[in-house]
Length: 326
Image (cartoon, rainbow, N blue to C red; front, top):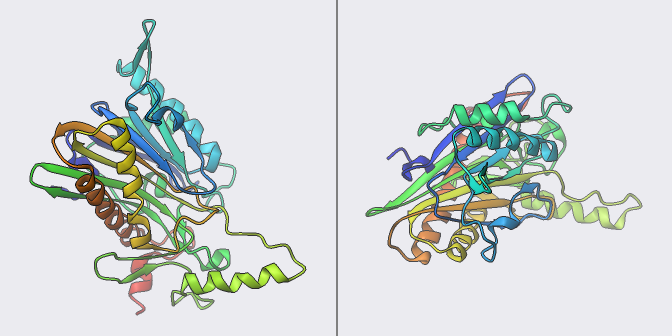
């Protein structure tokens, strides 16, 4: 076991990125998925092909999940994923034309690197070419430009990133992959260690994001309009080898969201585009309560790993730099 979403047989992950521009994408290839679902909790999502995953709609599962930086501009990179899959003969046969189904979501990272640089089709294609069972974590792929801790000024934020983890019970496997670009603080769900968030003005200590949020209440009584809590999100994928109907795959995505508040405080705010996709390869008998609970566990640990592995970059401090000062 790699403690990765790729512990689920048939799942592969690829990254592609431009480090100079601080833009990247991550693709989860899932050609063997039997069913899938999605749960969008955030108030400001940037997504594609999510309606298709509604249990009442025809297609049972996508052939890839696309995660990207670049805000809404980044959705264009999924076109490269489609072309790659079509060249491999992977997709829905529509009147003898192969049409790959690629669902996806993006994060807002345009305050990092080049604000006019966006992932494109070539980057999406390269992520597919790079796909394997090994999943680098931290400042990679769709997590290259991710930040956390948006309760203060821009220079008080810390580096976010990408993480993955898995949980197993007998022959049942559930894995999670996540890009953490959240408003709140991140803590280890197992030890309680505070891993990252909004730094104080000295850049050495992490503030209590919830308390900082409450201080913003005063903005409602001032002449200046309240700007709200915007432009941040955490997006992810959970996968399992369990046999799940399409409605139960959706339930798995819903239960996986429980992993967010275990590791992120506060979570699911109105300005976030929090989205989780769920994939089931249909090989092992199980119960949705078991699968969903394991998905939440894997997701919470994947969030913590994303921050532990995120290096300092683009002028933002990573976990290891702050941990050394404690």
